Image 1 (cartoon, rainbow, N blue to C red):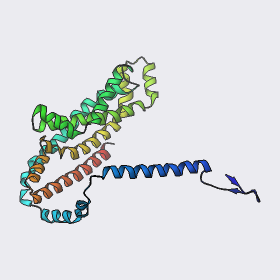
Image 2 (image 1 turned 60 degrees about the vertical axis):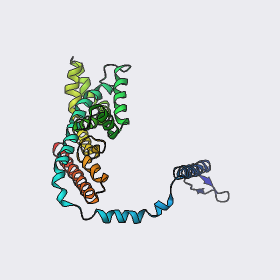
Image 3 (image 1 turned 135 degrees about the vertical axis):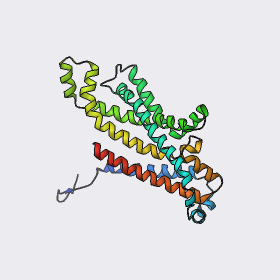
Image 4 (image 1 turned 90 degrees about the vertical axis):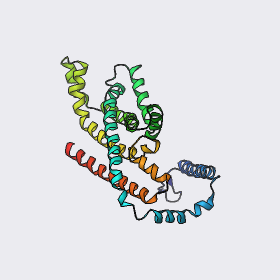
Length: 271
């Protein structure tokens, strides 16, 4: 607040003078840092190609349409493989993430000094590596095919599911836990009857959400040889078959919309 000398009236200001200057210099620093980063990132950009991009995009779209609908029957098997990669990978990831979450939660881990750090390391390692990179590594180890894609999706899903689940475990209501513990229930019985019923709805929602994400991610694993419709996309791109490319893109788009609607209905019905 600032007072006028003559009338002693209060003059309202949003911030004190010092805070206003700090706010102003923060914005100035942020803008300067952004311009510096922009200059560094675009120093090798050939702007002539950027200016010509709308023309090139229009030319590419013109070559894509109309889609080659006769190619659609050939995509049904790869699309089914993609759905299998996403579904089986999600199930495997959920099965592995469930115990990891209990080992990572402070309230259920057997050891805060040894077991919990290992569980947290598994979660961080899973979340740090993209499923495409997992697929690259697994294709090099296992060879190309659906198995590499399934395991890649599973390894990526462990960190996502386990992190959200162990946070939910730590936030459950402690009253049922204390009541069961007071009756002499074992640790496993407390988990089974006091914790699992509380986290089960959230666990189902997390699993469905991850499956929805994995549908999207599994569509591109074929680009590195992990099977699915991405393999057909890579083949069509390599021969510049643009009508086939746009058909595959439309099919992927439709599949993602369908999975989104299906997971929403399942969540609504179960939860």
